[in-house]
Image (cartoon, rainbow, N blue to C red):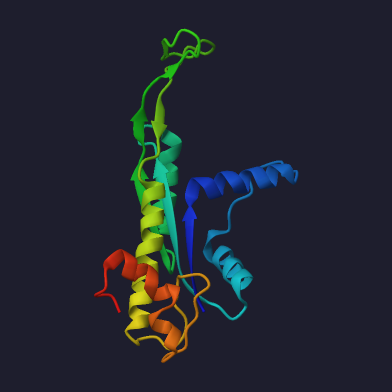
Length: 184
C-alpha cells in the first residue's frame, strides 16, 4: 500500500499547539516535519506501507513580518524529499464591526494600533481538488493495468490485477461518474 499525506498547515499547526498546551507544554513544541512526521503517520496506517509523498497547503499574510519567516520555512519545506507545498497569499478582509451599531472598528480601542484582517482563500479547495485528482489519477493508472495491486490514494479499495471487481468497484465507478463512460 502506498500512502500520500495531505496536510492543511494552519489546521494542523493550531491543533498541534492546542494538544501540547493541554499536555502542559510550557513552550511551543515544534512539529517534526521531516522525516519523523511522515514516517510515524505511514507506520500508523500500515507497518508495511510505502511513503508516497506529503502535500502541505498553507497561507501567509504578506504584511505580517512573522509570516516572512514562515514563508521562508515553507519554501525550505518544499525541498524536503517527497514534499509538495502549495503556498497562497491571504487576502484582505473587511473591518471588524460592532455587533450592536455595526460601525467598523479599524483601530484597537486599547492600544490604538490599526486592525488589519486577512482571510485564507483557496487552500481548502486546492486540498480537496488534489485529493480527488490524485485519487482519479491513481485509479486511472490502476484500471489501465499499470499497477498490480491497490488503487493507491483511494481508501478502502484494493483490487488484484485481473480481478473482475476492477471494472465495477468504487475505484472505477466514481471516476466514471465524474468523467463519463470513456473512463475504463
